Structures are given as C-alpha cells and as structure tokens.
Length: 305
Image (cartoon, one colour):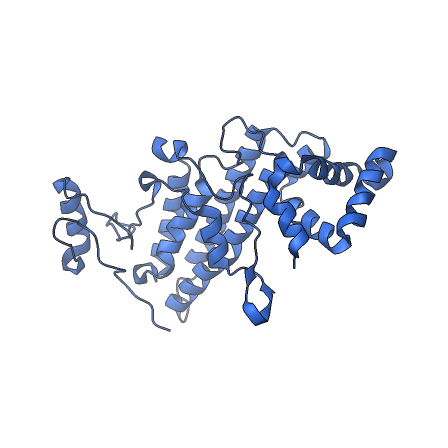
C-alpha cells in the first residue's frame, strides 16, 4: 500500500514531478547499467529519499501498461512513447478485442445449465476485472506519455471510448433483460460499434477523470481501524470516468430484433413526442413517467441476491 509520501507525490501530478518521472522512465528504458553517472545518481537518490517500497509502488503504477501492449513496449523502448496517434489506435484496438472476446464467451453460454447465472457472472467479470484493468492501463499510458497529446485532454483515450463503455456496461450489469447469452452478445457487439462511432458531442466533451492530470486516480480507501484498503472496483470505475460521458454519448441497449431496452438513467424529453412514443412503444406498460419531467422512476428490473 502506498503511504503518505507516495500519495503526496502522486497528488502533485505528472508535470510537477517531471524530473522524477523522467529518471524512472530512462531507467526502465535503458536499464540501470546504461544510465549516465548523473542519471544513476538521480535514480539512487529517489530510493534513498523515499525508500524502496515507495518508489517501487510508484514504478509499478507508472509502468502498469508495459508488457500488455507489444506496440507500446516497442515505442517505449525506442523512446517514441509520445506518438499519440499510434497509442490511441493501439488502445482502441485493445477495447475492441476485450468486447469481441466477451461477446464470443457470451455466445458460448447458450445451452448452459444455468444461463442466467452464467451471464451475470460473465458481466461481473468484465466489469469488475477487465474494465478496471483497462482503466489502470489507460492511466499508466497517460502518465508514461506525459500528457503531450495533440488535443488538450491529455489522455490516450481523448474521445472517451472507455468511459462510454463503462457507462454502458454498468447499465447492463443489473438489467434482467440482459439475462440471456444472445442478448448480452448482441449488446456487447452493439457497444463496440457505438464506441467506434461516437457522436461529435462525446468526442468534444471535456474529460475530467482518468487523464494525465487526475491526481486522485490511485487513491486508496481509508477504512478507519482497518487501515488503508484497496479501492472497491466500483469506486475505481466511478473516479476514473466521472463527468466523462456526454448524454449524447450514452449507449441504448437493444434486443437482437432492434427493440429498445430501457436504461436506468434515461431521461425522456417532454418536448420530443416522437422520442416519447418510441420509448413507450418499446417499453410497453412498464414505464412510469412523471408529469412534466419525463423521468423514468428507478431501475426497471432489480436483481435480488
């Protein structure tokens, strides 16, 4: 667990620690034996000042994405890790591959003894494990690259594909309408198509979380007498994606035939009768609409454990 010193360093952000980050990056790129005497002295001083555990924790987080993306490894070793076009394309393909993999796994659940339970388990694995790993990889790539991207959002994922993905999947996680392999696979592929054709409003939406400047990303939870604990996956997802999804960028789940499946947070525009009619046709008599506000009251489906 990181202690106060390392947390203070992380709070200061990448730019305020540029010399320290540069030394750590050079050591990882070149290896200690190939560092100059000055670089060796700087690197040794970090360990002497902050302690081995502290610096190792910082290195583990900074280089979290290395070894998971061959292209990133090659660019990093070659000292070309600031090539934001290559990194953005690489990270988008990683998102696609995760969705493809889980869509195939969902399809393979057809005929399972308890398909509903298997679908929920698969969704939980995707959301609580794979998505969290992607968020941590994104933060690592942002920190390694130093935020010197061509846009002003300082993130390898400047359109917020991963943010939209997290938002979409969390909406599906407790939706009983997703409890068949066919519908889950269909929507995973639908989400993939959606995140690769995001509207202009989402692309231009100013991202506030998970970027190079996000100093709270790695914070742990403080559990009173229990001491410092790892963050809950839901807290990681929230802190990494909060404010990053425009309403226009949200994904609307569907059944394979095209019928809309309601989101828990859908807001009906009372000034758009066509939109309201479409939703009512899709949802039938299960919809509850407040007078004047057009807000759907709470989740349509609930899971009980």
